[in-house]
Image 1: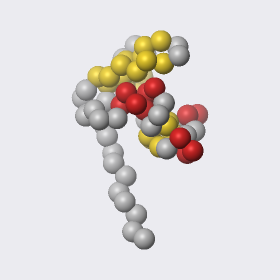
Image 2 (image 1 turned 90 degrees about the vertical axis):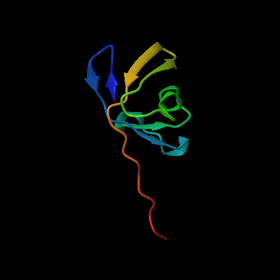
Image 3 (image 1 turned 120 degrees about the vertical axis):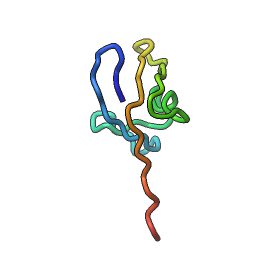
Image 4 (image 1 turned 180 degrees about the horizontal axis):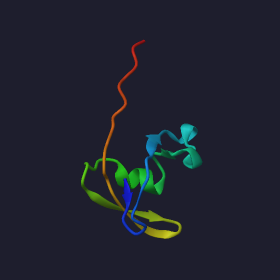
Length: 70
């Protein structure tokens, strides 16, 4: 996704709370950014309400994880 204010592209993987590791690009589905991104499509711009204020992102690409066979 593209940080609109900074003009920087960042890759995030949305994971469950227990797997979250923001420094390594894994954000929780319950985090402000994770919540803002869920349900949106490539090309859409979303605003996340964070403790540091509003952050605006444009979704550049979505890659869905393929289910693993058991």
